[in-house]
Image 1 (cartoon, rainbow, N blue to C red):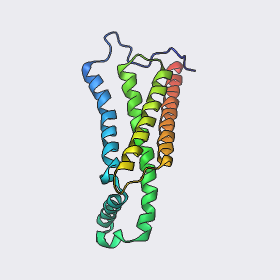
Image 2: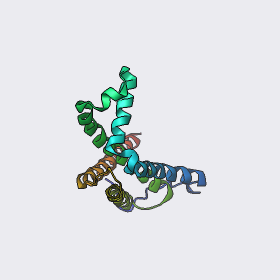
Image 3: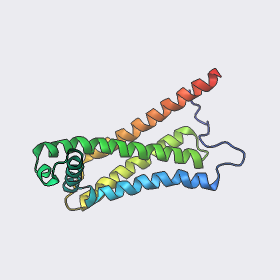
Image 4: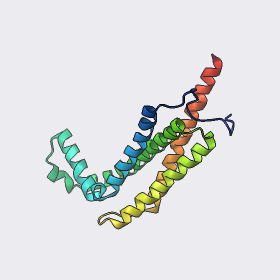
Length: 171
């Protein structure tokens, strides 16, 4: 079991190097940038439909114009967009967690709460931005999905750490 005061960070005597801190910060910034871009018109349903139709057309050599009007493709897009929320917010959460782990000496509980809070605020900001973009709709269910993805990513990370700790204790 984790102790509340157990530090998360790199505990080397010299601490994390400047390069390792930059790498740790780069990934969350990259995921936040991707979320911001997809939150705009580039991530709209119409644009997503065209991109998916183009990809399917290239795989099966079907002209994309024929696919864009297909009703099944519009339905399938729903099953692509929601898992994409889970994937992107899960990766954002994991990268933020690793960032805080690399650049702070906070206790794990503080890292968890801060990571989850930032990801939830990003989800709320993402939906608020979508409400201002023509062709986009802000959905509270997407914020819930983003929050659940973040919590799931943290639980998976916790399980990985616990498993690693048990392996090290056996040595």
